Length: 129
Picture 1 (cartoon, rainbow, N blue to C red):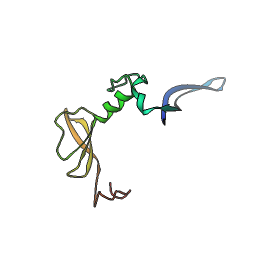
Picture 2 (cartoon, rainbow, N blue to C red):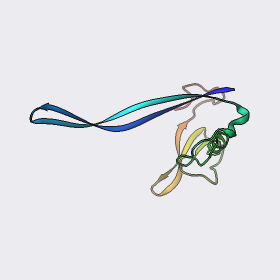
Picture 3 (cartoon, helix red, strand yellow):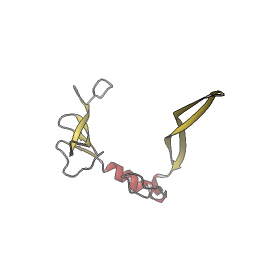
Picture 4 (cartoon, one colour):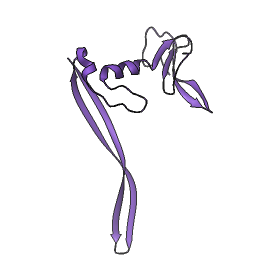
């Protein structure tokens, strides 16, 4: 069994009303954040029996399928993938660049997130900029 930790931050806008005096009231909108952390023990053999709720572009209904679906959004190859959607990641192994697919001026294209310098066989904090 493995221990899986999921952390979620929930943000919401709160209206704060303060009475300053008998003739003065201040109204402020503030953002309040709550962090929720959950540890779950997961057996590698039965990940497909843990139910998940589809969210945004993820349509899977169990953990095993969600992991596979997420893995399918990341490509490692030396040429641009043929089929991709906004948000997909591509590591261009020829140019040592991590890129994300996003829409720019009405066209879906890959935009560099990180570029590798030097020898990527010995990756350190200074290798990617």
